[in-house]
Image 1 (cartoon, rainbow, N blue to C red):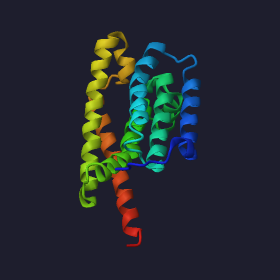
Image 2: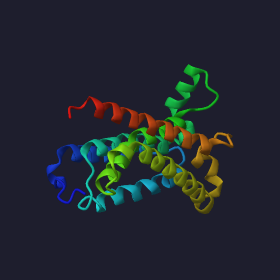
Image 3: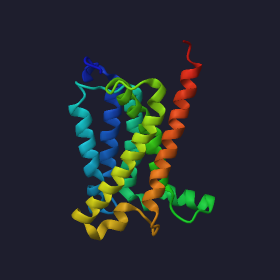
Length: 206
């Protein structure tokens, strides 16, 4: 566990990431396409950001992990502004590749696995004391489990807070298997991330 992390006031890269996310949050908060959906999408972001802030002294991630978090949250903030099913980039990609649906939602779920796997592995190695030889398997399992938990939490939030926004908030686009496919995309991203980590470790001296 990182007992003595670099103080935030001295961590310039992390300061830059926080500044970027705050700026992007302000920009995407301006006239979101569905204001109530935007609020729902951001509830988990607020909770997640607060958790990272309050645990910084007890467990500070590496700047690499914070950078990966930053990329993922950036993708999420853009999706929250338009709703995942209506992000313009997704429509452009759909037309370019002759797809049947806006793929932005799938891309972000894949990105979740790809970008969050390394921070998950960092927690498992440093806080849980997991052996490196088991880190890839357990990390992928954790990402898949967390993805499933999020799908359930997302559905419960939609039903309790705003049932009429369910379709927009969940971004199912008429696919009854949407949640399952999202989980598979997250798992695929995590597998790729661990493959890259494994290849990097093998190339490292010693």
